[in-house]
Image (cartoon, rainbow, N blue to C red; front, top):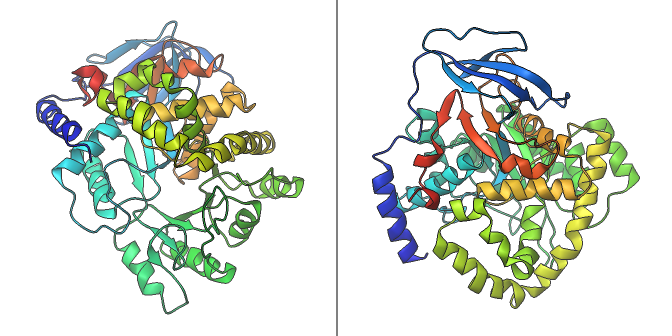
Amino acid sequence: MHIPRLIAGLVVVTCAMRLDPIAQQAAGAIIIRGVTLVDGTGRPPLANATVVVQADRITQVTTQPLTPSEGAHVLEGRGKFLIPGLIDVHVHLTGGRGNGNTQPITPQQEAVGRAALHSFLYAGVTTIFDAGNQATFIFALRDRERAGTLVSPRIFATGGTVTSPGGHGGPFYIESWPQDHAILDMHLAGKPDLVKIGQDEHGWMMRPMITKLPEDLLEKIVRYYHTKGVRSTIHISSEHDATEAIYAGVDTLAHPVIQSPISNAYVNIMKVKHVPEASTLTIGESYSRLVEHPEYLDQPLYRATLEPAEIQRLKTSTAATYRNEERGRTEWMKVMTPVAQENVRKLNAVGHDIIALGTDRSSGPDVHRELELIVAGGVPAADAIVIATRNAARFLGMLDEFGTIEVGKYADLVLLTADPTADINNAKAIDTVIKAGQVIDRKKLDLPVNR
């Protein structure tokens, strides 16, 4: 841990606690009028739309003239674009200390975690799914967000990972059934929103071989969580493992196939099954990007949300590690990221509800990099917005609650000053962020841009 950065963070958090990052607004509705609506459903943009929010829900979407009610908070949308709040379905939030750590969350951890969560809000991300972390850390933050005592994106979390002994992840190691179901009950006691299963033999990307769950045991684990009302996601990297997982009954795939181009047979399976799949292109591309183009860290969104000392560390020591000690991984991922991009494009082409945005990272700017990589791989920008909103909500099993701008859903909204369907980089042109009907005051978030 970097002590100077931590001390600086604690000082800022102490000051930030005196501020309210939720903008104070008059009682009554929020009305966004005259806006071009990109509602996340995949329908064409709707010009001159008005969206009405009451409490935490969307109550009206219309193109008819509307007289604001007394006390309403009116946002002028003319010349602007409204999209649903962005969603990242694969995060490992900074601040945790290992999947097996059971110590209570510390003030230092909370400070680091809060800053990361604020970076998501600043970037227009209103929901995240943490796909593996120190359970006491991430569940404490999740519970505070839900209690309204932490300004944060909506948090879904799994805690630790279920896997075979010596397998990918942990600390819930399952070897036999039904003898080991008590281990799953320990995991369930933390009230995970989804179960994350680790299923990978490694042997790729310069990593040694490890063990995997037998297919019949995998099916029993998935079925057991289903009896408890808990959805599943699974770490895979190969087409073989993905196919086995699908027919074992998993609900979602935590990654695209990255070890090889996907076959036509696999495309056809997904065309039939429509199993949601996280995109997670950023994590692999991040190695070579930092080595070859460290100047990306000077972009406004990174400067706004990353500490200057962190940017300097990334440009120097981290980049040197990727260039030298982890050279094999850096070069392997540089070669295979375009393969994963093409796999994502193929699946989006046969099922516009399959790919969901995930970064496998821990900051708001990474969500926008993921959008860039999805589009650079051949996915239209308009589809990328759907991937980051509707499809991501579907991945979480929450599409009835949020992910699109429709009556009855949570008012998770991002007002932009430019059209993201014309250029995905316009998703960074953020004017206003609203989460659950509350306008977020981006100028009061615990971030470098506000100090």
